[in-house]
Structure formats: structure tokens, C-alpha cells
Length: 219
Image (tube, rainbow, N blue to C red; front, side, top):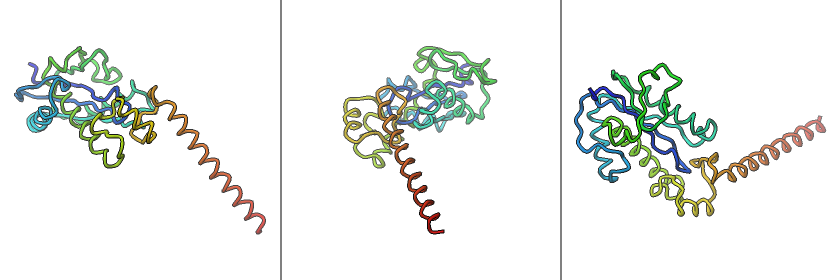
């Protein structure tokens, strides 16, 4: 039976900004019409299905890795980490795990023997389709919510992808905390950020040494 399959899919592997989000879903017999790869659905349809999946699925989870953590541990480890975080939220029995793609992101866990990887699983396996939909809606909503905090980047429109408009915004405003500075197009900003951090640290240590030297003279 396909009803007790734990389906897993990720969203946000390639963008220059924002989190990586992994969805995990056990439908458990829930019949939801129209499930498909989230990229093949309109925004409106994804949002409608997202509500139905959350209401009817036997269990679902969403694992996040933010841009700063992603920069620290790398993309491969982030995919594993986000997958583990999503699966930890599943408290429904399942007999098999299907991950979209070719890599077993649970290979270093006790669940590895239950995993099967499958290309295009998000279009073929209902629970994986559902996982891709809830992850996509969750991430898109988060990116749209950041427009007020980081005006000018228009994250709600390109959701962090490397579009011409996004590139122009970075050139105009620089990077913000949502940007993945380990990604090749943004690496120069990482160096600049490190240099700025070093300058601030140097200025602080200079002030402290000047202060301690004036205190010594006072004594």
C-alpha cells in the first residue's frame, strides 16, 4: 500500500537567499485530488492543496536550515540536516521512505534501510508530491514575509533565486542576513563582510587598550 509511505522532498536548494526547507508527509490513506510536483502547479492551487494536506495527512513535518547555518555547514550537510529535522516531526507509522532524487539524505541514520530514492518522485508518488507542496508554500510564504524587513530586494517575487532583478538589488543594497554568502555569485560579499567584522574587532580592541592604558596612567 502507498498510504503508509513517508514522502520527502526539498525546496530551496539553488536560490541565493533564504532557507532550505524539506517537507515530509505520510498521507495515511488520505485521498487528495490534484497532487503533483509543486513546480507544475499554480501558486493558487499549491496554497489550496497545502491546506488540504495539513488537514488530512496522517502526519507531516517541515525541516529548515537557514542561510547562516547553510553557509557554515555546506549545502550537502544542510540537505541531510533539514531532512532529519522534518522526519523528527513525524509520529505516524510508515513502512517505507521515498526521497525525491538520487541521494539518500538519511544514509547516516537508523532509518536508512527504509529509504528508496526515486527521480521525479514528486510527480509520481502522492506523499512526495504532498511534501514538495507544503515545503514550497512554507518557503514562499516566509520569503514574502521578509519584504517588510528587507525592503528593496523583492523577495516575495523571486523567492531568493538568482534573477536579474535580484542581482541588481544586491548591487544596489549589498547583501542581507538572508543571503547565502558561500554560494559562488555572492562569495565576494563574504570576504567584504569578514573584512568589516575584522575592522570592527580591531577598532574595539584598540579602544579597550587605549582605555586600559589611560586607567593605568590614572593609577
